[in-house]
Amino acid sequence: MNSRVRAMLRRVGKVLVNEFTPPPRPRPTPSDQEFAEGYLAEGRIESAIEDPPGGDVQGDDTLNITIDVAGGETLYRAVQSPLGGPGRGSRLVGYHVPVRYTTLDPDYANDVFVVRWPAEVEEALAPYRPTGPGALRARAWNLLAGFGLLLVILGVPLSFAGLLDLILSLFGQSIFGDLIPGYWPGLALLAGLSALVLGGSCSVVGESRVAAFENKRAQAKKGL
Image 1 (cartoon, one colour):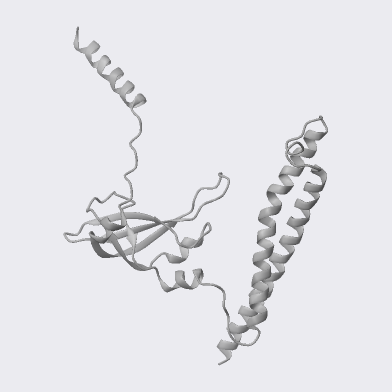
Image 2 (cartoon, helix red, strand yellow):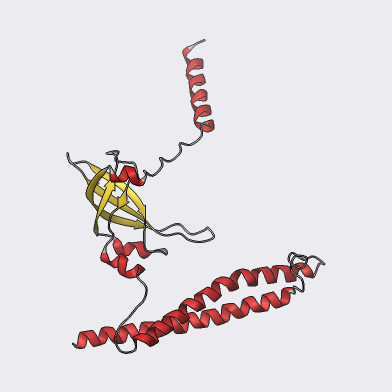
């Protein structure tokens, strides 16, 4: 067997190995005990990456954190943003946060635990409890906005189910008719659409009233 044939067989073997070898599994995140026994340092939030759209629900941002260790080495870590919703993680870029990690592997991305988030995170996650003149009304408007959002969340699947069953009923088929006595797809569709309209209206009105209250309070603080 000449050298050309052996070289060709090696290339074929390499292709087969690369094709059928399963991808490596991601390293698991260390446990709380391992973090507690690991290193404590200061990390810097360098960037926020939005979850790419295309799925059922767009996820929260991923925060990239760098940690400078002894010897001039830099560790690269990643953690999910505590601020829910796409794009909100960018508000934390540039902050320094205390972190724990267990190894000096520069590419062990999920080997990180944020000990304490910036005050902005705590304020964002805290219940909405304004004070001062008009605060009680602002809380009520905030509750109305949350109720409206709940109606929208319930109205989406109800409308879809009612519309789908209504279309199928034209062909003598039904998905929920045999499961729910007295079920009528037209009524489910009407209820879902009503929930969307009512919920959307409550959410928009409530949020606008809360925003107006916050703007008025901010202007009052500037006047002082």
